[in-house]
Amino acid sequence: MHRDSINDGGIYTGAFFFAVVGMIYSGMPELSMAVTKLPVFYKQRDLLFYPSSAYSLPSMILKIPVTFVESRG
Image (cartoon, rainbow, N blue to C red; front, side, top):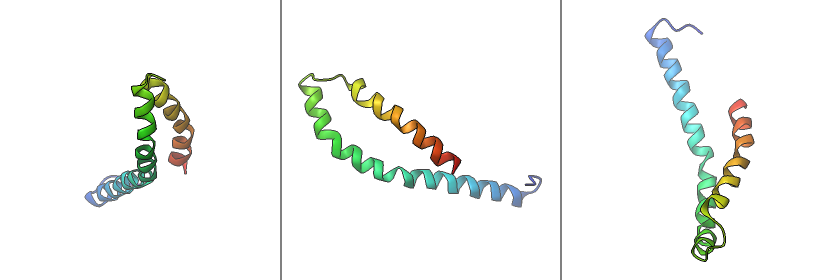
């Protein structure tokens, strides 16, 4: 794709905007699941069952393969 004119820059900007909006909308279901899990997290944290890292690290690690698949698609 050429990148010499203002129109070409507009195409790149549009593609970037579309990619960012797509990532935002793909994260919406995750937001509702995170809010649903909060009472359990707060209860376990307050009763000193698990440290916060034991709750957040596994979920981040499990999301890495999904992120790669979404970015390649």
